[in-house]
Length: 76
View 1: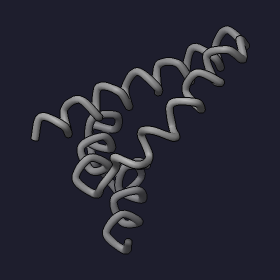
View 2: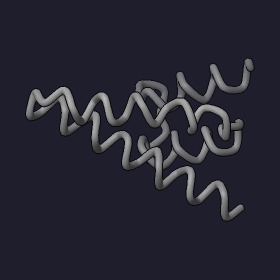
View 3: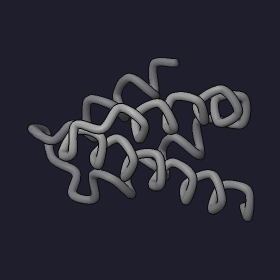
View 4: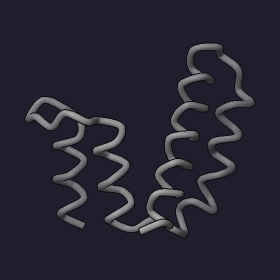
């Protein structure tokens, strides 16, 4: 359970870096997030992804991206 919390914190930090890269048009923030994906990808599982989806898209509805992502996650 503690590992899931740490991974979600990492995912939030990577999302912040991506948002910062988009808003400031600085490629170094995007490259930092992309470099971290290699180690993060090895630790991911469905529980971590589900918690990250609910953390980033908190309100579920049929028009929100989280419902599409959760449907895809259930297929896999």
